[in-house]
Length: 204
Image (cartoon, rainbow, N blue to C red; front, side):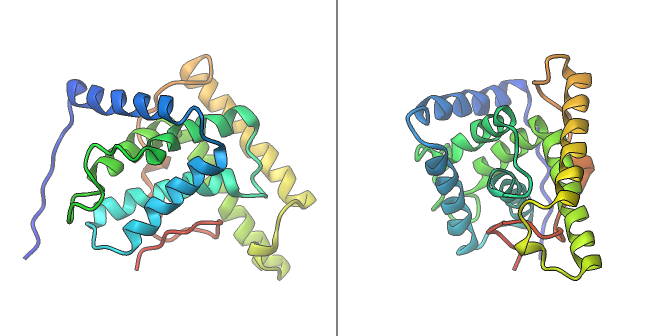
């Protein structure tokens, strides 16, 4: 019989995770972007091979979105935005997890918390990328082409530029400088069913 547990992290609790994230960013300073991405992909692979609660799975899909954003040839994140996403991914390149991943059931709980924090920071990026993927999937179907084969095409580039400009405007409107913490992830969408993107994680 399943049970429901709700817990809240206060500012003191979150400071512990933010300090761990900062340590991981410093530890990742000598790593290439490919190394950071590969470590995050490896974590998703490990999670895919074990039993984890649904609420953690949902957040791992958000991590998959972050990885896809920096790997997607069609999306082509500008350099500064790419650095921000890689900075968020740095925690997953650090072997010194708060909770070791091999702990049954809850081994990925700290990763889920970190993903939630990163998703809040990257709200506008994730929103824009979701919209881009949905547009690409609709247009690919309408034109009778496979979305997996699309890289740079004029109609896709135009939509990408429009969405990224809107993304920057919203971030600057919210935070002035264009950087900071947002509240909530991607309009609350759970993303169990998502338009195609170069992801590696799925709900089975």
